[in-house]
Image (cartoon, rainbow, N blue to C red):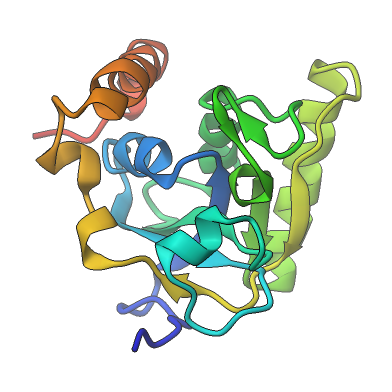
Length: 187
């Protein structure tokens, strides 16, 4: 059984939980961001305890596929992480990212503190203005979070030639790397 994560493993780190379609895409992007120390694929804000991938994919658990991003706020701010988030997915499509359709693929930002909520709402408002008021991103406190199965963790890194990874994740990652080159993790 999975145990819901609650706090970052190291003092001084923060976590934000983001949903923007398939978690493999977001995980690949945020693993490349300087200042991000860990990215975990999971499920949140549904009504089932410890859901399986199959149950979440059925669309009946209420969960979103998400990544939980642990970051060092002295190296990258939440504002910057959210700007990356809005740039790497389409926040104007309800319950859909490309061919991934269903409530589990919704756009969402799930905060863990009142301070994060304030930043989330500020960046969301800027995105609303920039996108003509069409942003449908769910804004809520993170609730009922569960780590996804082991085989989903670092999926793109382990399976870059798998069909979905080659045709969906890789182009999204390449676009991110080009647009955000200064924010990339240094080797």
